[in-house]
View 1 (cartoon, rainbow, N blue to C red):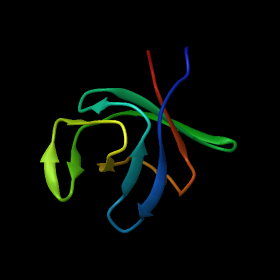
View 2 (cartoon, rainbow, N blue to C red; view 1 turned 120 degrees about the horizontal axis):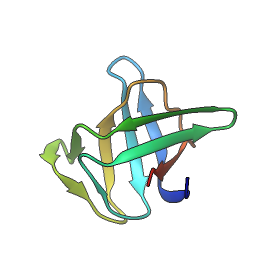
View 3 (cartoon, rainbow, N blue to C red; view 1 turned 30 degrees about the vertical axis):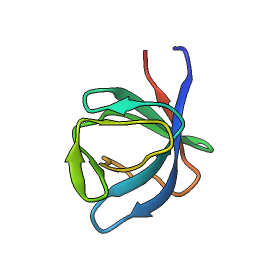
View 4 (cartoon, rainbow, N blue to C red; view 1 turned 60 degrees about the vertical axis):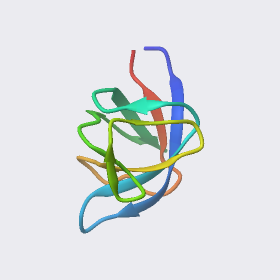
Length: 83
C-alpha cells in the first residue's frame, strides 16, 4: 500500500464522532482513507463531508473539513489515501 498523506486531524468531537481535518491535498466523498495515530489505525470510506457546516463532495488543499468517523481520531492523527 502506497502511503499518500491527505491531511491531519486538528479536532475531534467524540460525542458525534466527527473529525475536523486540515487538508494537505484534495479529498472526495467515496475516497478510502487510513487514519494513523501512533500504534492505532483504522480504514474507512469517506461517506459525508462538510465545509463551513455545508455538505460538500470534495475538499481542496488548505480546507478544514469535517467528516464522520467510525472510531476515535484524536488531534494529530494523520490521514492517508488508500490506493
